[in-house]
Length: 135
Image 1 (cartoon, rainbow, N blue to C red):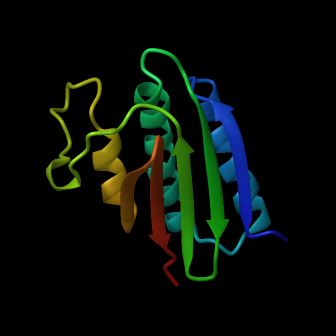
Image 2: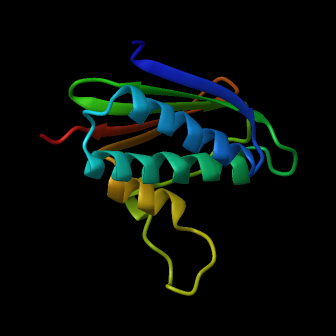
Image 3: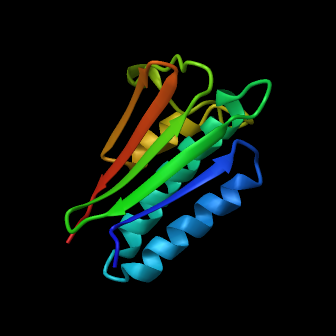
């Protein structure tokens, strides 16, 4: 069974359903991934997907690509999109006030992933979400 699953989708809110479906297929193929790892990885992936959908194509949606790998020791999600450059400082990403309606994505991803990176190569944004599997 392939270790990697991928999708290409438009940067619109409905595509978040496709992200959830991709993760569901990954769990179906890899039932050995523990519930805690699944939950934390999925939170991080969906939060970054939400940020890509909301911000990368502002004001016009852009397509994004997502590749998910399940390895014996880790779970990886790699996003790519040709959207706007992201200005993010992971060292200052905190949870907003409890009544805030936005601003939790990166903070939640940082709290649930073991590694979160962003880089811009040429005109393409690259995000990596990594969760090391627990025994």
